Length: 347
Image: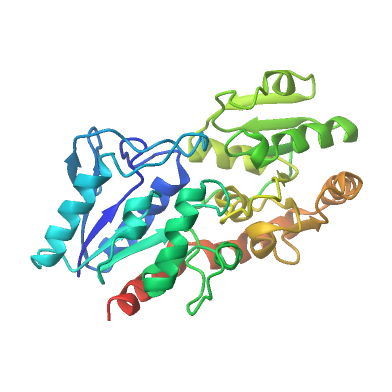
C-alpha cells in the first residue's frame, strides 16, 4: 500500500513534536512503514523528518488549536495539499490518504480513498463541527474516531472499535513517588488547570505543572502560587521521568467540552501513574478500574480524598497499571486498529 499522511499544518512537522496530533500522525506512519507500506507526508514548508519522505507546501498555516478563538478557513496551505493529494490518488500514484489535521476542507473532501482521523474535540470550533456533521451524513465510513466518547459527542454511530492514540512508553521501571501531584498538557482553563491548582491548594500538596503555556487565559497568578511548580514544556522522556516521581495525574477538564482522547492520560498510565479525573469525556473510558479514581464532575472533596488514597498505592499496583496500559496503548496494538480501519474504509 502507498499512503499519503497529512499532519496538522498549524506548524511545520518534526518527528519529535510536542503536539499530540502530530505525534499521532508520526506514530501511525511508523506502524504502516513497519508493515511494508510506502508512507509520504504532505506537510507545511519547513517540515523535516528522519523517518519519512516529505513533500513540502508553501502557504499560510491553519490557525493554531491553542487559540480556538481564531477563525478556521479553507484559505490556507491546505488548499494546495488537498488538491495535490487528490491528484496523486486519481492518478494512481498513491492508494490512500489519511488526514490528521482539523479544518473544514479535509472533512468536506468527497473522495473514497481520502480518509480523516477526527482528532478534534466537539464544541471547540462550530464550523469544524458542522463540516464533520455533513461528512457523517455523506461518508461516515471515511471518518475515524479516537474514542467512543468523541464519537458520541459528534452523534456518530461507531461500527469499528475506537482508534485510540498510540503511546511510546519510557521503558523505565516504576518507582515510589517522590513528589506531589502532576498536571500535564496544554495549560489552559479548558484542560482544568484552575481546578488542579485549587484542589492542591485545599489539599495542601505540591502541584507540578508541565506543558505549553502562553497565558491566553490569564493564568500567571495561578502558576505563581506557592504550592505550584511550573517546569515548562518537556520532552517525552523528561515527562515520563516526572510521571514516575509523581503521586497522581490530575485530569479535571472543563466537562462542557468532551475530551476527545486524553493523550497525557494514556502516557501517565503507561508510566504506571494513577489518574484522578472527572466522570466525563474520554478519560472515563481510558481510566479503568484500578488505573486511578474517577469522581463526579466538580466534586473537589472527593478529588482531594482521592489524592490521599492514591498516596498509599504500592509499586506493585503502579506496575499493574503500566502493564494494563501498555497492552492497550502500545503502537503494535493501536497501529493494527488504524491498519484495519484504512483497509475497511477503502475496500
